[in-house]
Image (cartoon, rainbow, N blue to C red; front, side, top):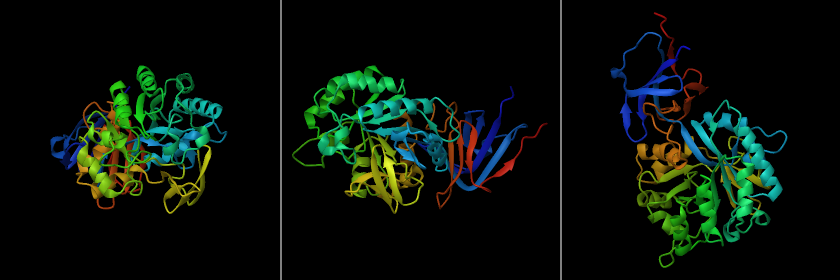
Amino acid sequence: MKKKRRLYMTDYGLVPTRRIDQCAILCEDERILSIGSRSAFVLEPKLEIFELPNAYVTPGFVDTHIHGAGGFDSSSAFLPDASIELMSRILVERGVTTFVPTVVSAPREEMLRNLSALADMLDRPMAGAEAVGIHIEGPFLNLAKRGAQIEACLRPIDLGYARELLAAARGKVKRMTFAPELPGGVELTELLCAEHVAPSMGHSLADEAATLRAIDAGACYCTHLFNGMPPLQQRTITLTSIALTDSRVTVEMIIDGRHIHPRMVDLACRCKPSDKVVGISDATMAAGMANGEYRLGPSLIKVEDGYSHTGDGLLAGTTTLLDTGWHSLMSYSHMSETYAASAVSRNAALSLGLTDRGELLPGKLADLAFFEHGTNRPLLTVRRGEIVYKVEGAYRFQPANPA
């Protein structure tokens, strides 16, 4: 079978750990062959050339915590008309090439049925962004920090039930969020690690001792830092302050501009090592949709002017996707563009144990996202070497020379 070779050329590229001016990326089928300044490349025969002037390229974004988009709710995958394709397609329109559909707590049988339905969806190829696993946010959460989750659906830690949840998803669970202070927190952490599921601390009132016990047992991830946990306090140490200062812990932050004050975003970025910050959307099914009422698992949420909230006014996820959100990391903090791009690509991929994507390097998947310089409008998205989204007129194309 003939191999397809493509060369993409643009103003600059964020690798993401460094910037390459006059960037060119040579791809063969679904992998990157080489990357560098365009002057280093010979325009060989049988090479398709895509030139994007007034644009820049990043690795395809990786959203590790997203509940839905485009009308699809990950917690309602069992419904007859549910289609994860709606979510997959809208994400590639925003430069996202990899995502982890995230489910919230629901009644037991519904939750098991939903995980099974979602696992079926992940078994099928998707035309847009690629779903690489499932994040279960609950049901072992602290009632006092449940946020928009329904109180009746939360449960004490039950290792038997945890095994049922993992079995229903047939090995596709990548991460589970739980409150480490609940009785059985260490045992749940150990079970998840044994099943190759990343334990994540969140929706919690854990004190210093409970947090450190969980970290020592293997819980080295924190779900949406600052949200669903105690505020910082100078004489009381909790999950929040430990997550900020323990270099073993990777923290994710909702970067919609509303969930976290800009100075708190800056504080986190100054506290954490550069590879331990992950930007997430936490978007709901209403992302990309008009104002109105939508589902988030068993709950109804209201979307007004780009924000999701419950009937009581509690924030309930977002409708801001990563193409917009990652710029908040630069505008709210001291982050450089390379640092910010890493938070939604390289760092996110590594937090999932994915080493084949998130960077523009030889041998990595050809997952590329091109944006218009100045406006940051998504222009072109490439997933596994195939163009899955394009804006008309975004590039100049030179077909392969058969000679």
